[in-house]
Image 1 (cartoon, one colour):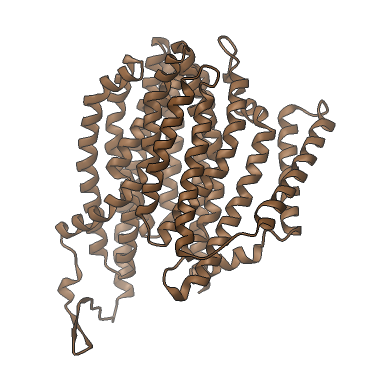
Image 2 (cartoon, rainbow, N blue to C red):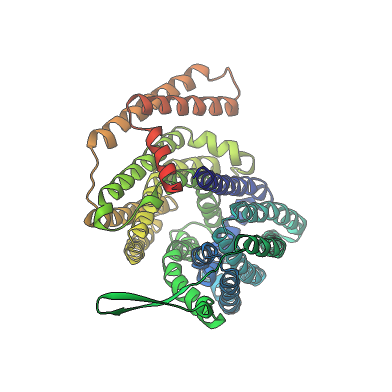
Length: 552
């Protein structure tokens, strides 16, 4: 039992660390990239990525979850042949659909570039098309490693890709900058494909080197054991008769493809909603800003600030808060006898994510300018507009989306745990229509312009979350005490915010701005944690028991 618990905790920690490293590298990567491309070039670069992400999700969005599920089951059954068949089926499906979608992207890229008000972007779309194929194959290997419980390989794959992207994209964009910003953007895009290729080679090498080890380990574990597999269960006179045929233990290649495709299709539908929203943004935001009377250069810069700088900063705390909730959610089980335990797990999960999220909301609201300046200040200039002020204002508004996005992510996970996979897809689609309407309305107003995206995102995330929550409460009966969910957290946040404000005023001028910001944020975190423990809003014992129960 201790070994199982240690294995689970180790795997969870590895994935959390690798995800955090990847996000941090992604944020750091944009600092020198901003210096090379400038805000206008970064805006063009960010217009390409959402389209690429959408096509990548359409090609392989459901394969990571599908491969991890089926390979895990085959591994538990000590069936290496089925694991291999499922892997090959996933690679075949990924290769087929990614090839089709990469050709479609190449075909429509001139039209997309024209709609985005930049005809020269089609070259970058040509360059990134092969990365759809490579990225899809990479997703299959990631799902395979997760299914095999080889978390360190899955995590290493992500980190290697992020590091290589940092190196290749920056070098190529810098080298091609002398030919103009559009060529520098092209260099950064080529770097993405090269980083995925290196990660794919790493995955293939790892698979080949571990394949023989898995075979000999299985052979040793099955020595002197006779294994049979249930084919079917027939019912005769209210008695179950089990028929065993070991020859039916193995999937055919055709059955493996059918099995993988049928399951991954519905997972992909859910996974593609947010990339579709981002892809629509990349197509409509700049033209809407231009229609509002903003010149093209400024429109690209504003989009670069919103999608390249602010979004990358907001993404950092969301991965931490989501990870805290994901450690508890696997305990959700369906069935009447599990309702009480499920209700408690869901309530604890929302509590943890809520308390974690509002801390970052307060910090980002207080220090939006300092955080933006600390990370990207050297790449921001005021030649055409006050980029630093616009960035900090956008970050301050978007800070509230940390809370909404995390609660939406958690509620979606809960619905998946309750086996209601179609519900979040429908809710996201409904909220997405509302968001598009608001964005078209707000971006067309000159005085609101790019700030309209933050307002539209708030409506999108919060409305989708409320729809999810309503559906959850139909299945599981749970409620929140206003005192514990609103009043006490608000009191803790106000106290923390007041102390941070006093420290900021008292220590201003005594220390460098960057050191002072980090010191005050650390003090705020400690104060907030102490207040949560003192008010009993956070219970480490329950969190530990959740990990322990999951391990069992």
